[in-house]
Length: 97
Image 1 (cartoon, rainbow, N blue to C red):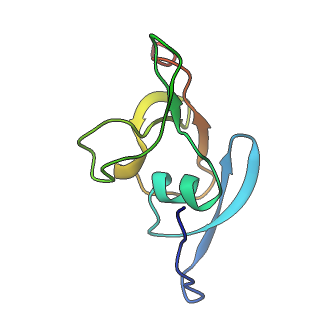
Image 2 (image 1 turned 45 degrees about the horizontal axis):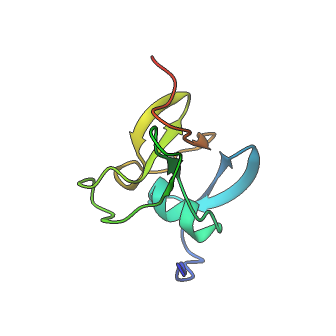
């Protein structure tokens, strides 16, 4: 469904996605990284538990919310990967800060 174009010139950083270490080109959003690595949903809804995934890819719809470096409700489409970043699928509204 989502395919990332090859970019062999880009520097890659190690990111942890749902407890799996992966290499990701710098300049990639967390949402694009999740989709390119086969993640079919980035969160579940609080009411029904329905799965949601990035939709608008520009920070408007909030369907891409994920837990990034321990903080829930982060817009994955508006956050760029960084070295050592830890990203988790968000369940419901996420943990309170």
